[in-house]
Length: 172
Image 1 (cartoon, rainbow, N blue to C red):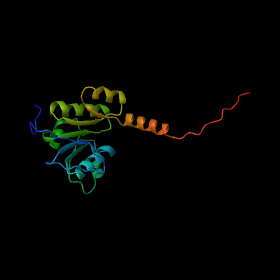
Image 2: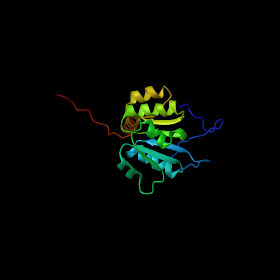
Image 3: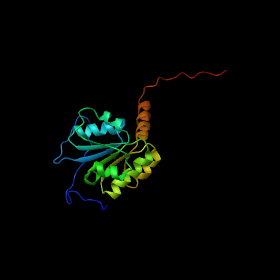
Image 4: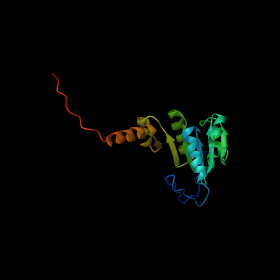
């Protein structure tokens, strides 16, 4: 399948936003979220609350419960590497894809399929291994590495602590 060009000649912006700001878009933005665990379901609910057209994919049907009773989006039971399931979720018309399963290999492969085969520019992939996240980011894949984020935040937090001065003990 050749990469599709949606709104050719037009620029769509996908701004980052905090919980406080909830941008509204001129047209409904379609997102596919692959992996509906704690992270994927939270991203899906947040985007849905902002008016995005969201479809989640997860291997476990029980994952639908994480989205809550007021979930307005779609849900596909299956593996994110199954192209039939990606098509069922509407990847051909997607503006954005978030890949947040519990496996780096799956996330990287699915992210590259969405980016290269389906021509989706806004693909964000969770990668737990900092070295792999950096490697793929250098090759054009948008990666988010919770491990690197935790290392940075923990290091900065401990540096910000006030540590009382210690009196040197003499060794006899």
